Length: 139
Image (cartoon, rainbow, N blue to C red; front, side, top):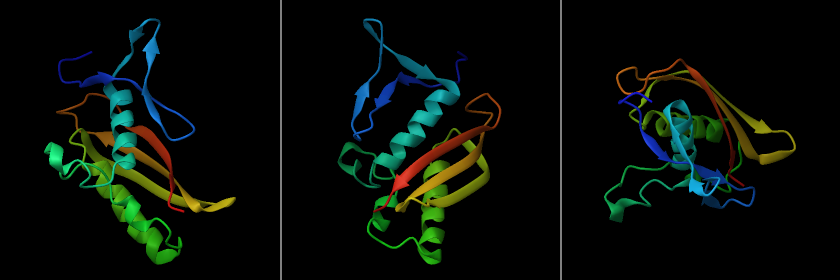
């Protein structure tokens, strides 16, 4: 691990929406580099923007929750795209987004699949562009 990389505890995202610490044998597992950034982006999408303001992180999180219950028509998909872009770019280790696609899931119109190609900021995280995907439930 280079001295520029962040290291954090690895989180285990469960199917029921809960989050727990991952174990490696009897020890807590850690994550660094691109894997750490992917985990951090996933967590940003789970937190409402402003939810951590009293902990001195008023800009952390995303605005995706503002679209919960709204139809995923063209206008709202455009707004969701903007919220997703803002959320990804809010991590200082992200240099740019080379590709960003949003697709409503055919079997669940309240869920949207996000696929992105992210280019890290080389001054903060060494590594090539990588694929990031998440499914957002806005139902």
